[in-house]
Length: 264
Ligand SMILES: [Zn+2]
Ligand SMILES: [Zn+2]
Image (cartoon, protein in one colour):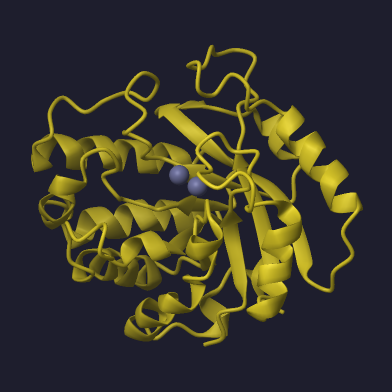
């Protein structure tokens, strides 16, 4: 299967971008061209929910992020297909960082249902035990899958902030529970992201690749479509896109398993 899109790329506009000099929309697009990537989805973090006060980290990352991005993109000429979206957040089940009305102004919205590392904003599990984490992450996922505005759920079921417990937490979730949760995503037309974050690298060897492959297979079985992504905050991360082949091969994915928006 061709890996020719990356639907989760941050720019220097995201506060967590560690390479603000280099990771500009212009350079991201140039690298996509070099890598033969046909579609890039810009997805900076955005807070646009007037009904809920975010933490200090989110405050400056409001809807002006999108306006700034649109201005910059106007000056760039490229054959690459550019989609303008954002990475929205789940604060607790039913409470999100953006409104459905704002979502309508974008090409796509990818939704995180597990930013548990943002401890001063996102509702925390009772403890880091697999039992508590699995209950918590399923509840968040189910809420995101039925929010009505998500194109895809990003880095699904990664126990961010609690990655030491990732393997054990996933083990404690039954196939039936996964099939039910992914069935909900499928019924709502919400795709599942396959991220390079699922591939343990030197900096991140805390889990087995078999862990995400197990539940991604169940997502496929439930009929879910997929999006491919690097969640890049740096050019080096953006270059990792072809590594996803390991996972798409393991899942025996075909073009028809990809979100229709991304089939060229
Ligand atoms: Zn994220
Ligand atoms: Zn991200």
